Length: 223
Image (cartoon, rainbow, N blue to C red; front, side, top):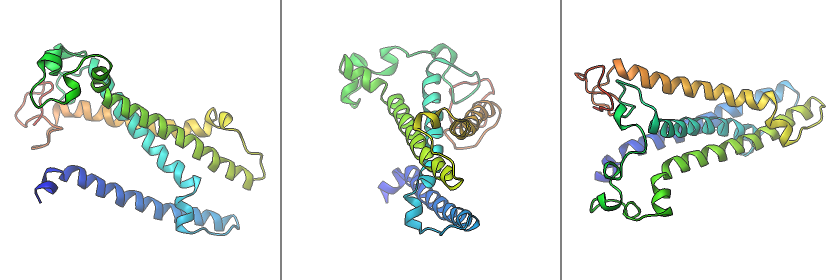
C-alpha cells in the first residue's frame, strides 16, 4: 500500500492511458467497419484493426504532438520566462544556471545521482537527458506516423483506383501536414493557456498552481 501511495500519480495515469487507448481501439474499429460496409467491403476483426495502419497512424499522430509539446516546454523554459507563472523560473534564473544551483560536480549532495558528480560527456548527457529523450520519442513517433500514414493513405487511394504515393511524396503532402499541424496548434494553445491562466487562477493543493494566497506577480512558486 505504501508503494501504491507513493506512486499513485503514475499508476493513475497508466490506468487512464490503458482505458483510453483501449476505448479508442473499440470506437475506431466500429467507425472503420462502418466505412468498410459503406464501401461494400468486408468488416475486419478487432485484432486486425489494432494491427492496421489506420489505427497506428491515429495513435502515433497524437503521441508525437504530445511529446513535441513536452520537448518544447522543457527546452524553452530554460531560457524564456513568464512573470507570475508557476510554470516559469524567476526572470533572474533564466539560462542553464550555475553548477552550485544545479548541484553538480563539487556541489553535488551525498544522495545526488552518480553522473551528477562526474565531468565530461557523461555529465552533459545526464544534464540534458530529459530533453534528449523527449525529443527522440517525438521524432520516432512522428516517423511512425509518417510510415503508418503513408500505408493508410495508399489504402484509401487504391480503393478509389488511384496510384499509391511514395513516402517522400506523402510527408510533403497536405494530408500529412494537416494531420500534424491540427495537433500541434492545440498543444501550443494548451501550454499557452496553462502558463497564462496559472498567473491569475489557483487550484488549492496542486503543485501546478501557486498557493491560493500568493501574489499574481509571484513567479516560479508552486503550491
